[in-house]
Length: 368
Image (cartoon, rainbow, N blue to C red):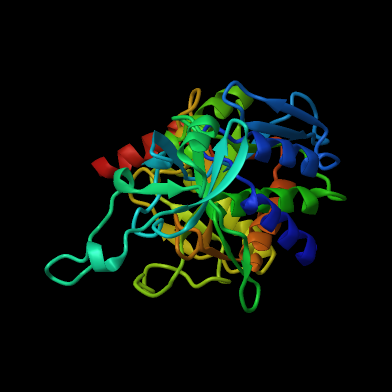
């Protein structure tokens, strides 16, 4: 995908506001962006967008699902008092970094700009001299309006997101909010672009899922709706940065990563690594010893079980307004998925299936 178009697409994605359960603007935007890249659209019962690009193989064709979540972390108004708004966390917002930050209140009458008020340090310093920790429940948004006007415009339950325009850093790095997981949504878009002009036998089902941050709900419903034969879930992973162990995490620009563990299918992971080899692309491996906490966990156990791969785009400063990614990692994730998809044959699942005779051979080998 053209680097300039990818950057523009990513920035547009992350600057939109769509906390878990309220992804309507992102869904509408992606429907427009994916138009022409897929043949059909569907929306499931939880609001996930499903784009279908049909393959050329004999019917009934196998289906591969590419799933990245489009929701973001956010906050919710829990009280309106004396012209200020008390906040509650929807999921995953770090209260250490929200103080004194600009926010957008997604009120029913329209978006309102505000700031998270912070008491002066002269008042909040403890006897030790260090600033006091202020939890979400004790943080208030100041809209700069009279109390009666605030009471008229804002209601309990209105959503609040960070007002964080994208920042273009040096090189190809971009910082902003909602990179988790819209950087991966952008990778799905890149994959659809790379599939243009290439033939693939399987149907490709691109899914922008909802409510991942709340508990993988959108991916669970989407997997039932789509019923794919194979799936690639996409999410972000920790990149090396100050305070993060460089022995365990990759540098930006060295990804995407592949996870290996019980939540993922070894045979399908091997197939993606073979595709990376054909591209002469370096793909770091991350050990995932337990449930990954990503959409992969929900997809894997859908229906009778779906062979699932987890492809990760590394980011710095996760769950903050300055999540930082490399455009190169996003583009490579798209290229890698497209290469893997074009190599899928109608009998591919037979090559990665667990076979009873193999289990019997392993059993006999253990007894000997």
